[in-house]
Amino acid sequence: MEYTLLSKEQLLEEKLLLDKKYEELKSKKLNLNMARGILAKEQLDLTQDMLSVLKTKEDCITEVGTDCRNYGLLDGIPGAKRLFSEILGIPSECLIIGGNSSLNLMYDTIARNMIFGVEEEGSTPWAAQGKIKFLCPSPGYDRHFSITAKMGMELIPVDMKEDGPDMDQIETLVENDESIKGIWCVPKYSNPTGVIFSDEVIRRFASLKPKAKDFRIFWDDAYTIHFLYNDLASQPCLLEEAKKYGNENMVYIFTSTSKISFPGSGVSVIASSKHNIEAIKKHMSVQTIGHDKLNQMRHVKFFGSKEGVIEQMKRHAEIIAPKFKLVDEIFERELSGLGIAKWSKPEGGYFISLDTMEGTAKRVYEMMCDLGVNLTPAGATFPYGKDPRDCNLRIAPTFPPLSELEQACEALCLCVKLAAIEKLA
Ligand SMILES: Cc1ncc(COP(=O)(O)O)c(C=O)c1O
Image 1 (cartoon, rainbow, N blue to C red):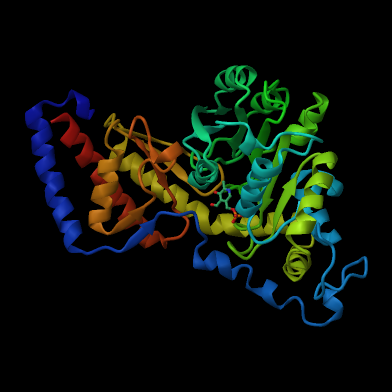
Image 2 (cartoon, rainbow, N blue to C red):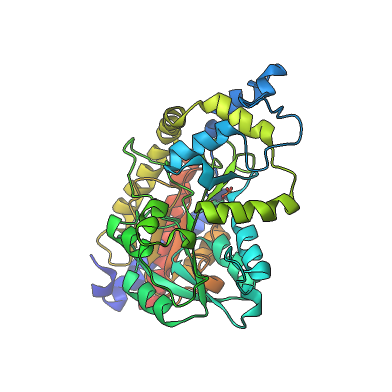
């Protein structure tokens, strides 16, 4: 029965029952974590053998004769470029292999544009243009928003729809406001909604006509091959699409192996037009003599090709898909039909997005902390940590073992119900 249709007495009766369960759970002194999208131990074990693929000195020599134990090859070893080129469907010459973190590449790209301007000759640094703004499809990835907030930009939320961000809103904003310099996107199995941008949304991104000539799309393809059910969603390549409209310099694409091999010890990549990549390399050559080529070589030898990576992703999916299914089953059992929650059913990626009754997400988060269950803070999925409807929570089911996940989800459903009753009664 929908909570909104219950009388005050009925709601209070239900609350008594739920309060009792809450106190029982509290006495168990839980210590559970559904806060961040990290790999379970069994997933890390899948890649253990990568650490021993470089046994001899010959193993460290690239196909162009470069010794990975020494300096050289600023933009990455050929094998790593080939691997990412296959994964992203982008020519090797349009890629730079980075270090262990794509977020670091994103930060550097923003910082470079702030200090020096975009890759066009004579472009004015973003920092020298007064108040500038950045578009943030929300709910989205908190760490993206933090970068642009830290740089002092004004963050503008854009609604997320079922097929990607609201393109009508985006087109109107970027076509009319020269101070809007960019947008964050996670185009496939988005963080946290699991949304897969449709072909039409991608085409509209590719054909944007921004008023700011130095507008850039930050296309964070972090979950590009991270399917859960062995059926990888295919998408047009934004860089290829943008080329058709003469917009290839408007696009930066990022990804990494953080959730393929080892988070924090993987390999990252930035892709863009040939023109941009050449300009970025010039800057990078001042910043570093080169990234960790031994790690690139480990990845190349361990995975071999895109097919090798896909096989590994199947093994990851075998471990984490049951966790996503379990969360969905518990939500269905505990919350469906009550009119107080809806949630995403992702086909890939690392998150489930839960919308509680408006005005209750913060309260749910508080109650969960009180029970000893660590969640991503309410509001984190919106710019400045402020969810205007106070309803979104990001669930990260991959890390805890199934038994702990079950306990954490049951606790979560209890708190979602209690917070709704507190609001209604
Ligand atoms: C959308 C998105 N981008 C980037 C990252 C971080 O990637 P990296 O480890 O390559 O810095 C994450 C991690 O959760 C993410 O969800």
